[in-house]
Length: 73
Length: 222
Image (cartoon, rainbow over all chains, first blue to last red; front, side, top):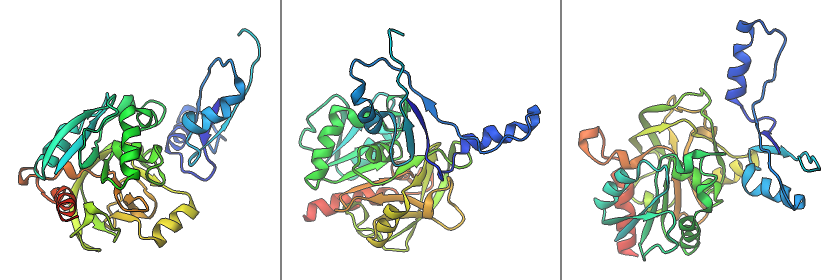
């Protein structure tokens, strides 16, 4: 699951990262947003969206995407 | 009047909350695994870093047995005060609207702050007039109150903002300078500043005690 701050919500963490980039010689990078990724193994992937809505993300402030990787990992 | 103060792994303000409640009645701790609130008359969800604030502040604590009991208690009209991390827990639990985000300056902030009462009605706010200024400390890293525009409009229209940071003192970028809000019925109040740290002249202000005393009086007269 990829969870990130909703568009339009100030992300000070992203701003801080963005502000540090020029000093490191990285030019031309903007709109940095810091989210988080949750990896898990699920027997019933159908319920993962519900899991995101109820716990892993706060739908008021965060968007989430689910990427499914099938197999035994 | 008996107060119950929740205690999660990672709580750190429950002792001060217990002391503040003790000045306005009797007070006891309630461990997060308790499903039984032991018949207390009011609940404080204290500050700290419940469950290490893992995932998001308050996100895990809301699923504790004690919080299930608190949700039922609140639905029945019982007074619930959430302070700092307690406010975050109540928002995550859906007992209060909105969310608390990382401070806009990224820093953890610890300082005395003036708040202006914004006119919400609640047992914790009885006797505090709209526009009145009180001085209590803030100490948090994730206190930027946020509500989506439609929710915010509804909160303002229905006078559910309890306190705003005084002009020029918004420490964290909270929308509309909001420091605390109440639920629709007014029995649940959450705020980022710490009234339990302002109950003794030794620490500079006793304004915080007014919230605890107000609830005690309101219940005694009910």
